[in-house]
Each structure stands twice: as C-alpha cells, then as structure tokens.
Length: 376
Image 1 (spheres, rainbow, N blue to C red):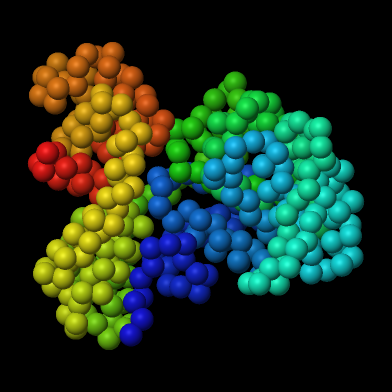
Image 2: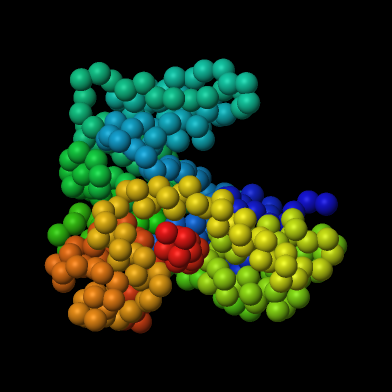
C-alpha cells in the first residue's frame, strides 16, 4: 500500500490539493505575456505549482524554461544557468541546437555522457569576462531564443531574490530588466520565499524591476479543501481519516502545504485502518523530530536578541513587541534591540505581520521553540 502523501516537489501526476484558481490565473497571466512575482513563505508549494503551470503551457505548445538560483554565488553562475537551460531544451533537435549555439557569444555548451539521463549539458565560459558581461550575453541569447518561437516562451526564475546577495547585484538587476522588458514573446515568473527581499525588488521605486510584474501571493490552503483532500487521499488507499482528525491536521499546520502533507504522511504510516488521536500525536512528534536539525541551524544563524524575540513571538504573538511590558516579560532588552531583531527576522522571513500582529511564519518552528524553552 503506497502512501498517498508527499513532502517534496510533487510529481505532475500526483494529487494536488486546491490551487485550481491559482493554476488558472497563473496560466492566464503567462498566456497574456505578463510577468509575475510569485511570493509565499518557504515550503508553500510554489515550485510544484509553477511546474504544473509549465506542464499545462507545454501541452499548449509553449516553450518552457526553468532556472533555480538557489545558492548562486556569482554572476557567472547565473549566466551559465540561463544558457544551459536553452541548450537543454534544444539539444534533442539538431537544427534548433545549432541555432541556439549561435545565440550566445561567451557561453558554449559542453555535452558529456551521463549514466542516468544519457547526457549532461554544462556551459564553458569565455575567460576574462565579468559576470555582468556574461549575464548580458545570456539574456541576449535568451531573447533571441524567445523571439524565434512561434508560441509563448515561459521562463521561471526560482529563488530569484538570491541575486541580491551577489557582487554588483544592482547592476545585474538592471541588465536583466533591460532585456526582459524587450522580450515581447515571453512571460517571466520570478519565484521566491524570502518575501520581503523579493517584494522590495519589484515594489521599491529605486530598483530596476519596479512595477514590472504582477504581484501574486499564495495563501495557506483553505480549510475545507484541505480536510476533503485528506479524507479522500486516506480513502484512496483503503484507510480512513475522519473529519475531526483532518481538522486537527489543519489546525496543527495552519494550512501550511508542506507540513500538512508531511503530518498526513506520518499519520498514514502509523494508521492501520482508522486514524485516531494516538496516530496523529505520534505523527506530530515524528514531524517535529525530523525538522529539528533545520530549526537548530536557524537558531545557530541568529544573534541572542533575535533568538529571544523569535521565541517570544512563538509563545505570544503580539501587536506591540516594542511595549515595555512585553519586552520586560520576555527579556528582550531595549527598543533599539527589538527594532533591529524585527528587521533582521523579517528580512529572513522568519516572522511576519498579519492583521497588525507579529508572529512566527513557520507554525512548526513556533511549536519547537516553545518546547525548546520548556526543556531548557
């Protein structure tokens, strides 16, 4: 009996909870040649969603390219990712591949045998060129590729906000924007999970990408849709999950897609026939234990005042983190210290302000922080 839940990027043919409206709207934006910033917290299913958007567009005859900028450390890497993606999708058609090679002046393909896929494509970069020059060449080539298509060219830049950490980041943004605004046959999706940074890139009037894309925010999964999804997926594999247990899964995860899937996965694993509180409790403990290394890494990357504020907001979300009684109750130090901590934690997307209330973004991190303080 196969577990019907996933906690990784979903295969295209896997059951998908809700997001029908989002899928329809994003496909429409793409077909209209609009550019979109797709923003949500980490592990909200953005990559799974854009993969489905591209799958649908591909079935309509569109060319689809996907570049993940997570972990890039230089402009050279960004340029290589863009060029290699063009080479990847043209490689199977010799005439297109030969044409694609002519699109780029400084980025040449290198094809090597690969045991799994048959071949792999990397990019050889011309020596002595700067990252800006290479990105200029990559965007020029990408524009030529898009212009040569009779149908839409849809391009996803995942974790796009990572380019702000690069040397000459502002110049890189400027070069990319100057090309993208002239790619009339293309739709770009800029995807990111560090919401404050990505939002600033497109909404700060001093930035090159200002007002150049539709702002599209993903919300938590709707409660009723998630409950129905959980009940149906258990049933599909011969097990039962009541509305009451499904509701508790929603409440524990606050509709957070990754955690809802993962908690349901472990609940399913522990269930013989009918999921009950015992199985759900055991599954929740497994979930927290599995996430513990990531949470510990988060804490290790923060200063003492940031840790104190994060823990305080996990225990007690508030509208007034700068109030004297709140700071005293949680030993947060001065107003200046709290202001600095708020700024850093918002930039890292660890806290957010919703309906004027500051809270921890990740609901399971919040639980772990509370448990951690009790243990210590």
